[in-house]
Image 1 (spheres, rainbow, N blue to C red):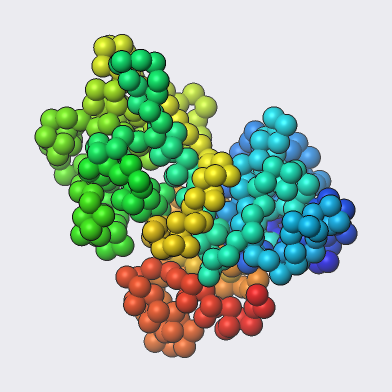
Image 2 (image 1 turned 60 degrees about the vertical axis):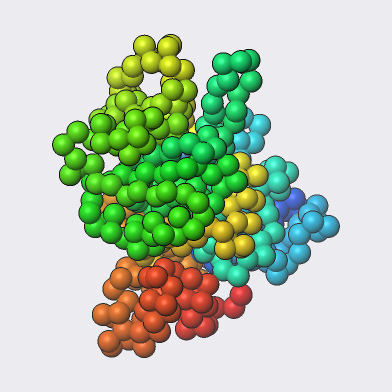
Length: 421
């Protein structure tokens, strides 16, 4: 079986190549990849090359397939798994394997297992860990975005609060409390808003900050304050760059209470130090943003840690339960992973987009691996549609959906490029 894949040979060395996959073993599964969204973690991988903790040292001779936010269709099943999986089934997958203490993960570590390709081989450990899941949703892109959504969900579940009456901990964000998402108008932040306004232990208030008025405007368009209010949550978008005293003004929104749950979505020392000052009594700060600097530090008020039970933690990735929850909520229409997506492209756009990810404005870059297509901003569909019937049709569909990507738009692409599902 031939596959076309984007492979990493070293630091900033990505190549789109076609090569032969080996026959699958009795404990492996061959899959056809349909969608793969690009993660900032992959950019960090290619910037570090062999220095990355998940990258093998022999990538110059045995390159790895990049991409870990992917979904597709099962093609061939090894004998060991034939009672559990069947050809033709759609799949989602959880890349956070942690198999027997190994850091190996798809998109970082495997020669034949990653998302930026037409076909790949899923190794035995994935099935043994329950990380390959049958998926019944209408679209592939929502299954791809299930992985970043599972990271967001893992963050919400990872927070905790103390109880002065005993030593039991209340796991999760505080019900009826105040949540703030600092740097939250990017793709992951909007996913966090989409999740936060519908959770069972929903907060009274969510405040989302950014320093870009353009990002704030788009955030309001895709998740309006009115939508949150319908779910019983008070939602605020604020530009801290326009505030004379951001800490005071942000606390004032909570009527002086402070924030029970503070999510830091940008790895910035000033933002972390502001987050610390925003914590309410027993407030939990979740440092969600992963820095590239392994010596990243910030000053924290230890007096508050002692006397007001303020505490700090970090979460990275989600687990199987988080991914299942993400996919179920998306299928039920309770969350909208599409709020993350601002660009769509084909397999030929992945290498360049990954290498230049921080320079490309907007949110998630969603790619489809079974055809070539330039990476294109959804907001540019209308202009391109003046001369291209495909983009005219895509623009009409997206405009009907608040400018968001959708299962209907995905099907238009598959029909245009004659992709068999």
